[in-house]
Amino acid sequence: KAYRFDPSDKSGYRSKEVACMYEDNERKLWVGTMGGGLYFFDRSRNQFKPYQIHSRYEEATDSYIRAIYGDNDGRLWIGTLSGLCILDPKNAKEVFYRPDEHTPGQLRPGIILSIFRDSQQRMWIGTEKGLYLYNKVSNNFISFRHNDNNPSSIPKDGVNAIAESQHRLWIGTNDGLSCLSADLKTFRNFKYNAEDNNTLSGNLIYSIAPSGDDIWVGAEGGLNIVNTSTGKVQRYNHD
View 1 (spheres, rainbow, N blue to C red):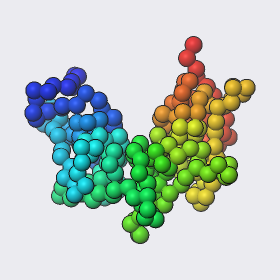
View 2: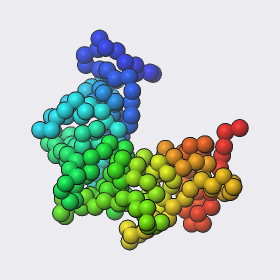
View 3: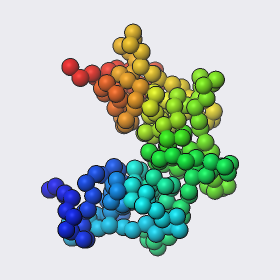
């Protein structure tokens, strides 16, 4: 069944562009749209229902949602154009983190592109301005930014995808694929090389999907499979 945009439907799905989806532990499907806000799927009625975010920072940009992921407490981490919203659907409680470039430990201004929870239950946020790790104890964010003078830094600040394989975090950026060391200090970077067919098909990374010892990487120029143990890359280019 297809669920299509219907401007006359005041209770159902009213956005043309779906940017992200997440199914929580109670099998409730949440959908983030570009301009239509947040929706959840009511399986009993086979219908999408809008969920209004009511933060004290509420702006029109809150209706643009690029990323959703759940934490181990059952809350939804929602990335909007104006910041990060943490929503507890059970009690409708919301916590909003607005970007602030002047305060240490806060998110920098920029679109939130990806959110991920790793096997240690840590929450990671990928943005236009770098990768962030939420510190639950101090209630702030640890940033990982690109440094031109450090080849072991993240290859680019734009983080489009985050995944985990073999207890290592893999990050897809606008300029290559990267693996973060267990001590969170260095990045091992993988990039396209026109003279080497055993490199990525392109540096713009769209998606990452773990599969055993491998990860599938959707990139500019085609699909790739990377062995996480050896670092060997195999391309599947479009003919």
